[in-house]
Length: 304
Length: 178
Image (tube, rainbow over all chains, first blue to last red; front, side):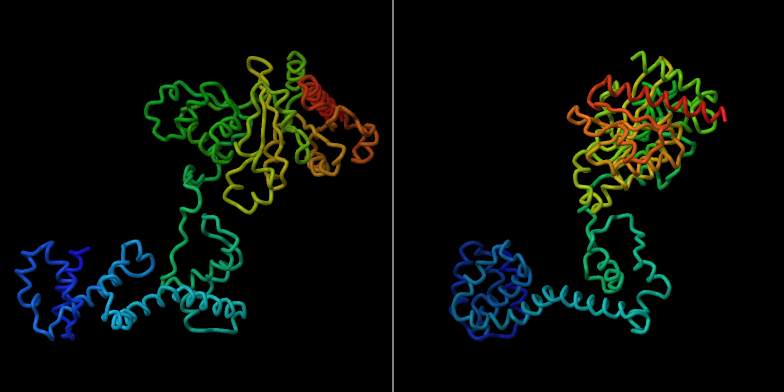
């Protein structure tokens, strides 16, 4: 802390206007000197024993100001700013408030009223927008472009990030503020850190080949070797299908949505890592199982 | 394919007859499905959830029967088409205290012309209504078999499956005959 003070002293001291002397300054210097006397003496000769009008009070004063700018603001108590008033106790405290208010209050008001200001803008914007195209403020039309924005408001959500229910009102507001930007982005970290399914499938929703839920797949010889299989999901599927399994089973065991697993299994089958056991053509008649097949099932069921 | 309303015991039936523990395509389905509304409020969860459960029965060295329990929630209706494709037949599991829950399932299978039977799950081993009353209440044709079962009992569940296959065979034979 002291070093910070000293830096503040020196910098601010030079630029400052002379201030009336104060005993407070003397005390601060006395407290400071025993710690690093040599440096202080080296540099200080011009200001450590200043003429009376070049009092250290501005130094001390500006220290507090500097420190408050450095460490002040919300959460300033985390930096131990409680010793600033301690050092300033005494006459400078009378001066301190207006000096710091010159800095602090606008800052605080900015930081506090900023969102409110925007919130007010939001409200105004919402009102304007609700009124429809009759209201054409230039700032709004310029910001939104012409035919692009209304579909967004109609409930279309291009973002894959799921919105909270309040997103309905938040969406247009965010777009409105795109230029000014002080509103922080919604942090996606609030949602889970899971990999999105569309990432695994690289955005595909249809498998490369037609796979029914019950289609049986088994790992091929090539898949058993597992060398050259880099994609973790592919590796998983190859590992799971050492026993013949259905697509549904793979999905359940991988704990992934069925559609995703279909795409992935299609990939793996395309790579020749798994074999897809297409049902015998004689077991199906059209889209119905053949009667012979069902009778086999029936006798099998009776046996178990 | 085992269908029916929410919580009538489809999973129980599948589990009773399956040689493996019934698998669901989403592990937290049971907690999640308790509060359907909460789930729909979190779309992220709903999209990763494909809540169907199924069991497997190896009937032969080269024959595996999968028994699929349909998702009970309406938002998974898109799954039903997948499940019905290639299915031998369907069981509509019914709780007589909540008969209306079975209507959507019956409508679906009748639309798809998938042979189905109705199995009344006797929750406390009591058949509260006569089978003909249930048939009347559900307004299903006399050709559709209705049977009572206890979804927890393996033998009973197996009997249900046998009935489905029998009915499917009869249904398809009748279709082929004319």
